[in-house]
Image (tube, helix red, strand yellow):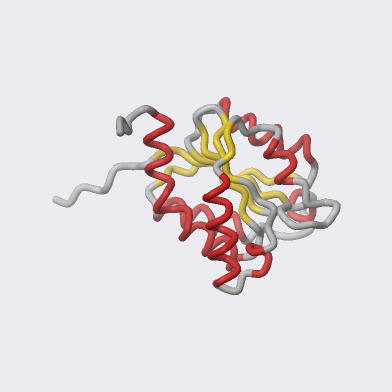
Length: 166
């Protein structure tokens, strides 16, 4: 009998999109992020959709942190338009930024041709004991961002939980 690999942790996905939050368009990215997280051995608690408003984004992030999830992935609102406020809202929630991961996600996204990933202002950091990651909204940016992030997440979560004694 083959045993399934152990779960890495719990995750929450936050989709930041005005049209999806108002029911004008279907969320196609949330299921993709969920699938990629499950492949990486996460249990996805929920996919939450919020409009591109700082208060709504901060509330979703704070709820996730208080709820004790190990990882929050936000998708959307990372560009340079006036409605792109995800990075600004995230900055107010983070205790410690981890700029190297954000830089790696941008560099690999741009190299893969995901222009929105390369131009993203998305942040990565820790709030409480939760890793928070902002990804650009295209499917290419999500796929590449998750491929860059996945090998690092288990290590970060182990350090945050105190299980990594190195």
